[in-house]
Length: 410
Image 1: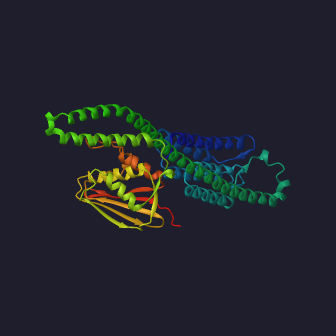
Image 2 (image 1 turned 60 degrees about the horizontal axis):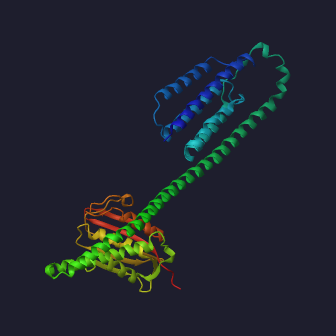
Image 3 (image 1 turned 90 degrees about the vertical axis):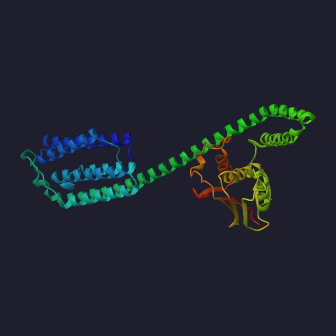
């Protein structure tokens, strides 16, 4: 799709060609005493009218529309030079202008078509053209120059070969240059997106660390109150619920301690080296319902397969399994497979399904959900040089594939 800048360039580029044609007609008549036919000005007038009409009713040009317009430009120039002496006209290099514009804007395939079409037009102009006549004042001395016809023929061939070489070089160099620029722009956009994710993670880490310190005081206060209530025998019937509350407080304190110790400092390379079975064990002990009968485990890996992990990777996998358990699923299947030094984890459930664009998911339907679990899981897995992909998601369930690098066996 052409931008406004490109459309403006295209409009003024055509005006340049139109102005050049008018000046050529004026100079031919007044300076060189060459009689160009009146059809030349009629052709140029139609070309100008078409350019103005296109500008007045312009819209967003597609690449195909620009390509068609450039073909029209080459055709108009070809007819102009056909009426003004063909390839002997020293301004046939005008045909190279559409090639330059195409090479800077369009895909390489379009540029090559424009290039070959221009070369074909130039070649035909050597054979087919309307000869121009000179006024009598310009005929003096013509007979003395007839012996230079052979040199003039060589001049035509040289101009023709030069045009071909220049056209091919421009198409090759500029198209390659624009291709590299587009590739670098794409890489730059990806780098900016990655930087934005890293900045978000840094902000989350900073907030998490600060929140962990701030929540320590109210948790300690609640813990003191719970202990005092446990020592009150008058409410002994509530002691069971208070003990559950106390265990949850300790669990919160443990989680906050881990956040304070690891947030912002954990590196994938400094994690533990564990077997796949140990990793699965760590995940199972930390999910919301460790003894759930919903979870089915299918393993197809060696017992000595090992990989680098840390607390963040374990938590990422826990978040994914928890999402599966909370999606109203009656069964969650975790399958493992080792393939070419990669661990492939398949997590499938028969729940309500998942939004495919899980990486950009920011909201949660859970009462106390923050909607960041999946985003952080994806980022953490990628930090360990792994990938996560949704293979299936609909009302019949979700299937995720996670790949993590294994440590090569010695």
